[in-house]
Length: 621
Image 1 (cartoon, rainbow, N blue to C red):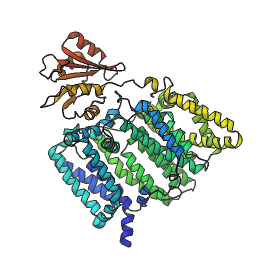
Image 2: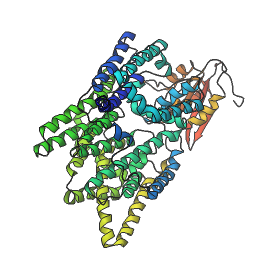
Image 3: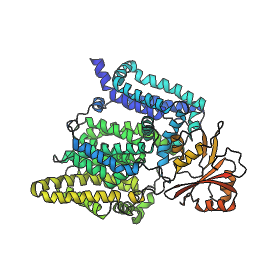
Image 4: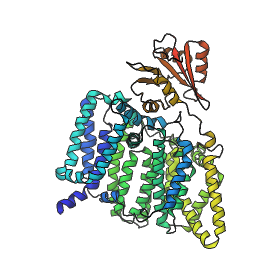
């Protein structure tokens, strides 16, 4: 019995250790070509062997491994809820006009979707896509059925620790010898964004194919998780909370709805803040929730670095509770001790990016001296939600301050603390980076709506019907028809910045030689070409160089394009990539032959060929 208890006690630590194995070993954070191979191996073992080992034997964490399989808070979830299913179906149908669209050009989207797609694209050269899907599905089913049994057996003699360490060293030796990381793509992309989202997208593409809807669907699932946690948080202050109402409001809240239409990481970020917030507040009553905070913060830091904004909010709230004699110094120390685990898991990746000068904190401290800069996110909030919904949010905060005291201070601290943090970075003025602020406001909105519905049901159901229709109409209008909403897409502007890369790949597929690879120069770095190369099974068959010159002009572009088989230019007129004039100058100069113009709703891509290129010609050229 004592041996079994020891095994059970260590299960949560084992899970956290396996995260380190996955996110620092299998995902090659240690692969830095600038250092000798032996140092890469040492770096791997520092990450997995040393840091992973510290976490594996870390004392004092409550084991919640059983809760991960069957949550204790499952009473609501086991009820058959036809209404909830209907809301989900309605939301999915509402997203379809956006989910069927190609990927947007000119955004960070390519940094999130392309790495996973490219890895699969290389795999598809040797393994058929269906076989990959069946392999992944089989592995998932096998782990679901036998994972716990295998885990228990491997925990004997700590094999669950030593076996992954040994296997990862063999794996690392293989990657170094074959240089596979740089064959797949630029090694710097390993550090561009943390690994969790890339591995989640990789799993999604492996199961459902390399398609545009996959990343969007994943963000929708994150949003559904946010709705669950917000409902739990509202339920903690009001027994009147209705899960269906909170679900509907969350799925159709304008910015959350918008970010479910794209594969950027924002709905996932909101989910982690919602999960961490709920479990943190619950941990003040039940210690086991500290482990939940450790879990979500550990994963969140490796999903998106901005989740670190939760930590100062939590610590200040704990200090306030200690000052008010609501928590003991022992509890405070216990929390600090537990928080060292997510720090060990999440911060090395961020530190590596900063050391290699690939990604840093992007701080802009001088914004604090400029009221216009500090107020930008507030202006954008009103501009993207509209005056009516913005007013409802702020009135909801006022209502809760006077009528709902419990946990108000935490959510206000989250709103103000995160707002200040994001305002003092180069992310200031981008609504996608400010979404945790919107989460805090949405919490107050959900509480206020819950209270209003309870009052209206008792006093005047006609008012309830009228207000419900008004609020639903506002959400429909804001999500689909509102004009000029800041940094948000609705039906009328959903085709903006979408270029026909899919059609381009279909055309280039006809030009690929039987031996060797097609070489294309396409100097526009923020575009989804690598995603579409993978989708059309052209990864490795087309060598695509999208490096833009420092000085964009016709001579520089044409001179470099002469070294390639084709030149591909999207008709973009942004500050960073302005090719509209260059395209016209190339056409007028006749220095290159214009093969074809691809058009999607007025957004065009021009394909040129050097006049002296010795390439296979398409019969339609």
